[in-house]
Amino acid sequence: MRSILERFRVYLLVFSISLGSPSFVIGQTSGRSALPSPKPQTAAKPAPPADDPWPRVVTYQGATISIYQPQVESWQGNQLSARAAVRVKAPGKQETDYGVIWFTARTEVDKVNRVVTLLDFNLTKQSFPTIANNGYAYTNAFVQNMSWNQMIPLDLLEAELAVTNDAAQQKTYQLQNNPPVIIFSITPAVLALIDGSPVLRPSADNMQKVINTRALILFDPGKKMYYLALMDGWMEARSIEGPWSPAKHEPTKDLNNIRQGAESSNSNQPLGNPQESLKDAQEDGVVPTVYVSTAPSELLVTTGEPQLAAIPGTSLQYVSNTGTDILLDTANQSYYVLIAGRWFQSSSLQNGSWTYVPGTSLPPDFAKIPPYSSKASVLVSVPGTPQAKEAVIANSIPQTATIKRSAAKLTVTYSGPPDFQPIQGTMLTYAVNTSTPVINVPGNTYYAVENGVWFMSANATGPWVVATLVPPVVYTIPPSSPLHYVTYVQVYGYTPNVVYVGYTPGYYGTVVSTDNVVVYGTGYYYAPYIGPTIWVPTPYTYGVGAGFAWSAAAGWALGFGMGMAIAISLIATLWLGVLPNAVLHYTQGAPTILARH
Image (cartoon, rainbow, N blue to C red; front, side, top):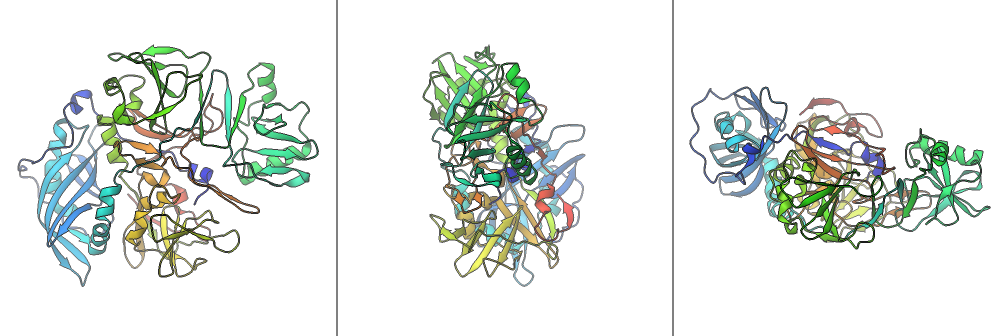
């Protein structure tokens, strides 16, 4: 498992999903049950080789259309039924549109060459929520330009078929939706999360350090004082729960030496902006309140008392002086806050008891928020809206790359001998004492994921080689497991020299809930591994400021905020279609990118 902050370096997947004007989306739901016969068009290009990587791209009426690997729905005899995600970049249009097509075909299987040829292709349905007339203008591209679908590797279809039943059940997940601890402040504040009870380990200069947190928290046994790095200075407290106040005396050289080492090794970081002066903040009377929590928590901060503004055409108002999505329904006088794609309700911001509200149980006016509203971004978290539907489609679009097999290397480091524990609900076990997800499949075969690439080995300690296939049982790992996120990493094909790999946003924490909306995190709290010298964190849902955004100009985005709630201190972005360098970074050597898709 990658450490949480390491994964943040590439976490912020920003998907350029542009939604059309409102007239384009009214009345469009799941597509047509039958499509009219296409008009004659130009001849198709020659069929690509069966191992041609996905997505496969066709050009139609000036638009660039990317068709992603089909997902098998059924394959009985020689009749295949499948669906495929589609991305459309129309000429002269800044935004990108997404959709799904469904089709049937007769199959001819060449087991010697491991190739399936699709014949009698029939497009049965399509869904493009943000394109006029449900995208009918592009129907011919899928039918006439047969080059994208005529040949598909047999291994891929067989693997898809093996997990079809599971995929059908796991398309949406029953998640853990217990509310986090929600802290509300009308003054500047910061939140330090500790992963369970604080664990102290010896540090330099006779100090001790809390190792199970990304914040830099030290304990001086001599003074019996805790110190927390904030901005460019230090806060102190007799108890780790606080109250925290600026250190009365200048921090010792020892403290600053430890801080410098932690920052340079990226093991711990100060809260807030380390370039800003804590002393100046103290003189100005704006030192942030420090909250420390050992449970999943979220911090809501407003600039002074909450200020409400109306959302036209609805009974809703929103708190305008905060970066958080906080809405008030004047019809029932309840507040709703959107955290990690989930809605929580309370009668009071300051003293309320928060409860989870399924998206399908939201007041009807939530779906009436205008696309031009300053709170249009929440529409991606309101079931049934075009924005929510397209977010689900985009969440299935993989990031792909071609990896040179001879160049990709992996070394797994354990804290002591490999310690494998069961993955509940499966026959699998996984190593808890390493930052790399390592899974043991019965038969003494080991699979590991590093930066979006699968590796395999006969031994837990290696040597490791790039995997060309992954057992379907791996994709049954449930959300209750901290390794659920690896189920979003795929092998799409291979040749003797390269492997086509990819991952969907679930690898970075997104999940589709039973409400058919994309949320961040499974909601489960996973116990971390804490060894004599290391802390192996598990995926978080809360406390990292995860949230979705949407606008007609920018589309759908997933963002993170860490540190100062009054000014987000960590935001990273990765546009769909751009492969992060981290995907190609290995402990030994670096694979060569042969293509980006």
